[in-house]
Each structure stands twice: as C-alpha cells, then as structure tokens.
Image (cartoon, rainbow, N blue to C red; front, top):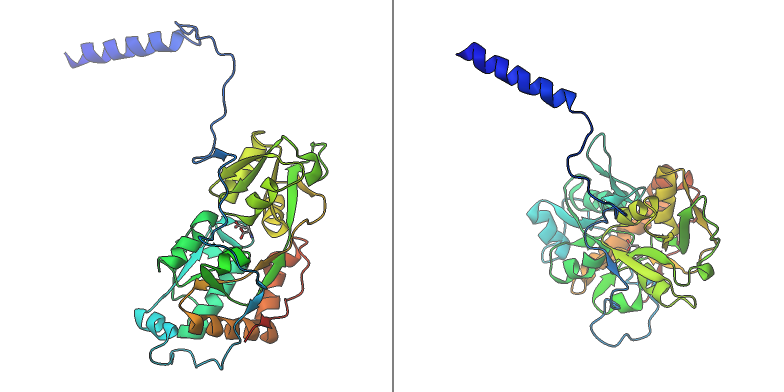
Length: 323
Ligand code: GLU
C-alpha cells in the first residue's frame, strides 16, 4: 500500500515539473504599482508642534548649567535623582538615521552621534554609559513622548524651534545642520527651486516638511514616518527627491552611491536635546554634560567618528544661555 502511494506522489511530482511556465489563466497586467512604505500621506495638513500662539524667542538660548554632581550621587529631589533611583535613563532616539541614530546590523546595538550624547548623559548620572533604555520614536512622536513623560530626553536630530519651545525645553545646541536636497545621480534637478509640482519626501512632524510646504515653488510633499522610507521611495523612483538636514542626507549618501546632495543649505537646523517642560534641573544638568563633552574632547572624538568622514563640517557650537 505504501509503495502505491509513493509511486502516485512521484507521478504527480513529475507532471508538475513537466508543466513549466504555462499559466492557465492569463491576467492582463498594464502596470504594477510598487508597494509604498506604511503610512505615506501626500500633502498632509500642517503641524507646527505647538498648541498655542508661538511667542518670538531665541531657540538656541538654553539654561545655564550648575556644577555637575558626581556620578551616582544625584541630589535628593531632583529629576536626575529619580532617574538614578529608577536605574536607567529613558531616551527617545532614532534607529533609521545612519551616522546619528541607527542600528548596527552586526552587533544589533544603536550607534551614532546622537547615541553618543545619550551615553554621555547616562555616564554622568550613573558612571555607566549603558544604563539606558532606548525608545525608538519617529520625528512626529518626539514632542508627545516628552509631554507624556514616556522618555526623560529626546536625542534625535531635533531642531530647537520657538514653536517646539512652547511645549518642551531644549538643551544648549550640540550641532548645527542645514536643510538640503537629495536626488538620484541621474536627475537633472540641481536645487530646491526646481521642485515645483514634483513629489518630494520628508517625515511627518519635521521642520523639513514645513519648509518644503512654504517653498516659493511648492512641491507635492510626500510625508512618511521614517527617513529611511524616503530613501527607499527615492530608490524606487516614487519621489524626485528627499529634503531634510544635510546630516541625515549625508548618511543616505554614505549608504547608497547612486544618490547625491545638490544645492546649498537653505535653512539652519540647530540641534538640541529635548527635555520635558517641567524638568529645568535636567536642562541645566544636560547642559553641564554637553559643556564638559565639548571642552573635554569627547564631542570632537564622536564628531570625528561619525561626521568628519561624511563631509560634515561644523565646529562645536558655542553654548548660549538666557539665564
Ligand atoms: N531637524 C529636523 C527636525 O527636527 C529634521 C530631522 C528629523 O525630523 O529627524 O524636524
């Protein structure tokens, strides 16, 4: 009996093999849409990140640091003490932005210039750079993650703006980027002024998206969740360009030899570490850590590791304080 079944199975297999490549039902396929990343929106409504009127401000001016307490000895009653007692710093970061916050595919660890800043802050609180719980968040989720107390800090290529200062605090500026344009090497486009009516990608909740919308030659803005979605759409020919900070675009150029940045910087994007509005002690503490990082050479070391070879040229920013 078993032999009969085996023979039947072999016979079936032989028929299957001989019937090669002849579809029974021919479907007429005129065009096949390439799949798009999840959450794509075309020309979404404006979001400034602020619930109320935006008062004028100097977005780069933060709070003056006090003396840094010794690691592991955060004073009672401070935000830093709460973090120390919890045993880990909770940091909102990116895992999709090469050079700033990305997942190393070999080690699975998060790495980059922003991740180095997180580690410095953890080291200053605990004496251990690894006492961190990373929460990966999108550009659009940064403000709410801080407002809802889901994270202690956000270190995620985040521009300090007056609109965002309404909802959160920022540290002193730790890097100054600028918005530029990325296109395929074969593209004829050489600048943002030629984008009128063309599809250009940016993330939801980013300053980059708002700037594109306000452009004198407004493109069709294709909004996504992650910067890596923009690179994918450019590679698939679904957008004519990607526009955001040159730092983020430099990471894409380093990953894909078929794309290039064109045109000059057309904005200034001073990066600050986002901190909840009520935690002014934490702002002063983080500013102390940043000042030490810049004066002690670890900022320069981190810059050399991630950004210098990528062609990014920015000296450490001079800290500005408003009190
Ligand atoms: N720096 C810009 C911003 O904070 C763009 C970068 C990003 O969204 O990650 O909105």
